[in-house]
Amino acid sequence: MICKWILFKTQEEAAAEFAAALSALSPAAFDEDGCLGYEAFDLGRGVFAVLESWCSEAAAEAHHQAPHTREFKIALSRLNVVREDFSLHPLGH
Image (cartoon, rainbow, N blue to C red; front, side, top):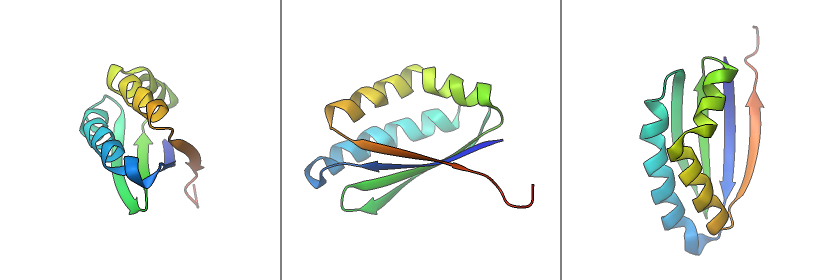
């Protein structure tokens, strides 16, 4: 299982536009084959997070190549969003 916590930081003025882009991505990602979970969060002050889980590395990679993910990445670039990824490793496994 692949789990990631991804933080996105944008200017507060761009937060509403970024939230709309993330809100469009979330249901599409959740419907992808191999998605075990995909939740987006607004942490305030232009900071957002995604908690995603995939059944395999191949499923995660397919998500990164999906058309809706590529469109989202264009929005990231246009809005000058800073992204930081954290791989999560369950304890006791």
